[in-house]
Length: 255
Image 1 (cartoon, rainbow, N blue to C red):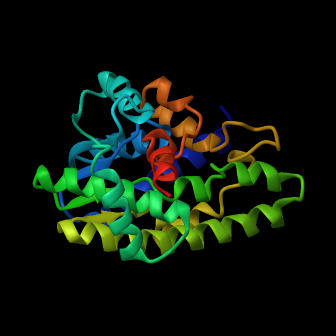
Image 2: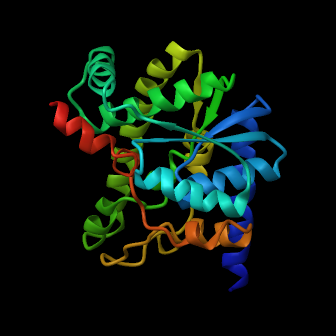
C-alpha cells in the first residue's frame, strides 16, 4: 500500500472518531446494524472507542439482514438484539408512519418504518441513543447512481453527491420525528457538516473506479480491513436497509 493511501486511511479513521466523539455524548448506545461494511465499521470503531454498544437489527423473519447480521456478529461477539417484524401489524404501522411524515416518497417511508422498529427495539432495551452509518453511501459513492454518473465526469458525480446528501439530511429529520415517539434519538455522526467537508476532499479514485464498479467505497473497505472488521463485511456489496429487511417488499403489498 502506498504511503499516501496509508496516510489517507489514518486521517479518515481520525475524522470518523472525531465526528463520533463530537456527535455521540452518551456512552451507552445502540447501533443500527445490518452486518454490511458501513454499520460494522461504525460498530467496531465505537467499540474500540470504549462506547458500551448494543447492535440492533430489524427485519421480517428470515430476512437477509437478520441472517447476515447474525453471521457477522459470530466474529465480533458484541451484544446483539433482533426485532422480527410482525406481518399482521405491519400494514397499520406503515400507514400511520406515512400519515405522520406526510410524503409519498417510497424511500422515506421505508426508512422511517425501519427506524420505527429500530427505535422500538432500542426503547425495549432502555437505550435512548442509536447511532447509524448514514452518510457513507452518499460521501463515498455507495449507490449505483454514482456508477451511472461516472461516464459524465467528476462534476456530475459531485452533483449526484450534493443531491444525495440533501435528501439524506432531510430524510433523517423525518426519521427522528418517528423515533422521538419512543424517546429515542437517531444520530448520524458521518452526516455532520465537518465530516462532509472532510470527506469531499478524498479523491474520487479512492471511492469509485469506473462505471462497472460494483463495490465502490474502496477507502472505507480498506479501512475496515485494517481495523479488523470481518472480511465477509468488507467484501459485502450494498443492500439497502429496506431491501435487506424485506420492508420494501411488504410495503408494496400494502399499497
